[in-house]
Length: 383
Image (cartoon, rainbow, N blue to C red; front, top):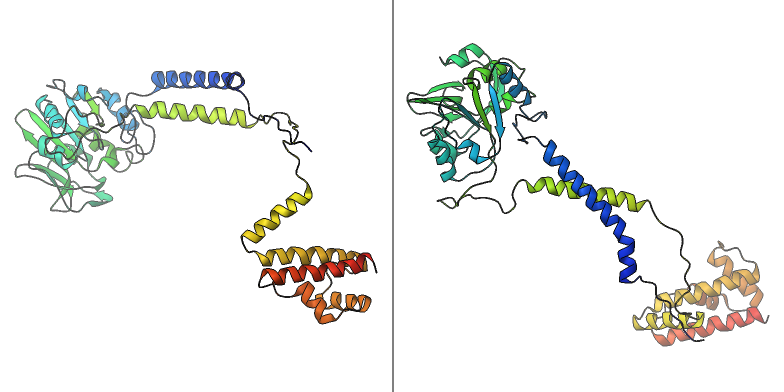
């Protein structure tokens, strides 16, 4: 029989027609998601953000400051933190990474009040000289101020925990273990610098505990204009020590990535439910059963799988013998051998070795087994 084949793929033109609508819908979804993100995304995001309502956000503190007449300007841009800041306060949130040159630009801006939340060692070296990170922090618990700082005295007991700092002589230190403290204030000329290690106490989840809100208001709400800066990874140059720098991917890319991921998910769900009609196709070739058997035999011979070949021969023979002699399929080997021996006159030992014996050790033994089973089948067909 002549073998025929039928093409099963689709051409380029057909593929374009099929994918045109999904691609168009995907593009529209992506554009819509990006537009929504651009117009609805808050000016700041992440932990200790004045716009975040998460447990680690600071929306409650931001609203508290606004209710007391403080104009809070949240930003993630370095350009907002290096503007002239005379008569204003700058709060620098935790996390982020800037190089030493950028921290120096912030120091040169002349802010009247700097509030540093869990600052890094590089940040302390530039903005709060003499203050250093202590080796051990404080466990989160209620503590008395143990200092004469007005803001701390008014707040009283506060739930503090986290990093502690050692301070230079003349600094005011509060809420510590007697050696290191989690609140340090340095006053130099017209500038006040507050170093705060317990930023978690001012988050949405803990602001209402003890005197946390009072301490936050008295420390941070000292000026009518407050710039709330969350450092990102937007350094303008390479760190002079070579131990930090901008990342390869700008932070804003995360919004586009989320939009693309959402669009892909929507399209996957949409296309996954459309299985389409069943397509019936003719087989490209017709393979005879004998060719399949010979092909499998060649594979067995190539891999020297005599055990599998013998098992296939014995299984086929047993199936025919069970049917010819009315023997149940689940009969024990001893019962099968006894029945066949009684009806054929064969030696039971020979029958058992032929039907249930060990696998042949070589090709000659396999051929001998095949001949024995063939003779036994001949007796079944011609009793």
